[in-house]
Image 1 (cartoon, each protein chain N blue to C red):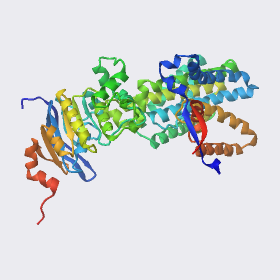
Image 2 (tube, one colour; image 1 turned 90 degrees about the vertical axis):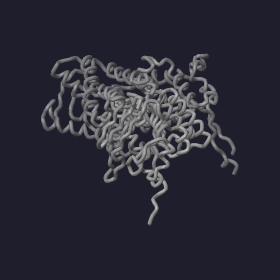
Image 3 (cartoon, chains in turn purple, yellow; image 1 turned 60 degrees about the vertical axis):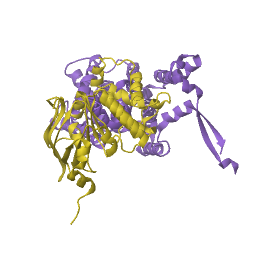
Image 4 (spheres, helix red, strand yellow; image 1 turned 180 degrees about the vertical axis):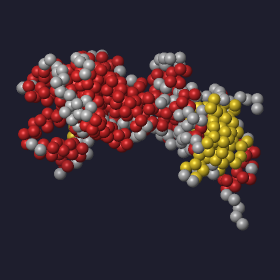
Length: 337
Length: 251
């Protein structure tokens, strides 16, 4: 019976306490403690394309990267600004069409269309969402969900930008390595950029808006302006993903407004660990390949997919990343009570 | 009136549905004074603050800050001019340490202008500000998470958020409520200190005794209307005020 009266005790690793200040660079061990997890992530992502068995899986990585970027943006808005955005499809669609149109009509190469689509697309998305920024919670989510549907119908009804067929025959990237490394490098830049941003002063202001927007207004700051900046950053990441997708396949169509782009990132966000930024990226790199593996069992894969999701929400709502972080930062042992 | 008027409120009104929360209230605020606003629950004191600071839209009436009409300005513009407020229900950023709470107001345009562009070590500025309002630096109180702070510190945190903006007017919404006698005593000293520094204060309060020690003038509200205004002793002598607090005699 004695085995029943046990509980898990958790202790912070002594080393962690010392990693916040100047001590973090005082010895190789301390430096390694901070650098190793980051190095594993960066090197892991960079090596990933090299170890994949065939062209098919290398393609999967490209699509995974798109979902990872959207999940990263979702996490940033949801956990650091307090805006729930289902605008993945909007960002992908707008970014994709801007890139597609500037490539097909103006004849610009991808090296130009992608930056243009990232910036112009982000401006368009921000302007579209600007009137809804004072709305909070579910309303903003609904509006962001509605825009892709509306734009989808407009393109369909007015037969603009190629109508239902879309625009095909666009420029593609020179080879599969550019495909993969472009998205992986952008993921890393966006990830570490956002991590830096949320710890800057402006990140604290955004955090303040999430915790308590009235207090931020009482501090003499225009919260709509700061929210618009946050939405712009997320939209830029999403629009890049859209433009990238356009040039990956060499075509742009109304499937770019597919709601998959709004929903899959949220699944990745839940599995990976809300609020960690790196977690959703990890989640995307687990879930998207998983759906590919499950493709063999046909439509049932959606069921399996949902079960995985439900299991995570019920048993590990904190997500994978927070679990790993805890394992890394703390000792655990069983003690008798 | 030899003293310069810093804030003029003219006939502001606000109705919520059929209820007149604030009904034609006018008053002047002289630079450097402490004005107390008292009244029974639901008499419209907090709504009046919300109207002045722009958090609630006025149905009618105007507010002038140093002869500038601020009636139509959004809350952040009014705060930017130097008219700041605390909230009755405290609104700290609970998931941040206390001193990080102040980084947000210190980052605001007004605070940065006041500091001449750069603020230098903002963490140090924030901790100095907190020490000024009574956070013991030696006991590491400024480093504690806002969600773990007791009520008294949260009230001070609210005040320090205003002070970070280097305000001209601070409007305190029930700064004393929920505090122990000792805490109130130190809060009274803090308010006196602010007045010495030339900050004009409006204090909405239920604690009359402490308020009367501080306030230069008192304004009484009931059912959204201003029913009396004057020096503290005089006001409490008025029949209408006593009726508002104690009820009318029936029959």
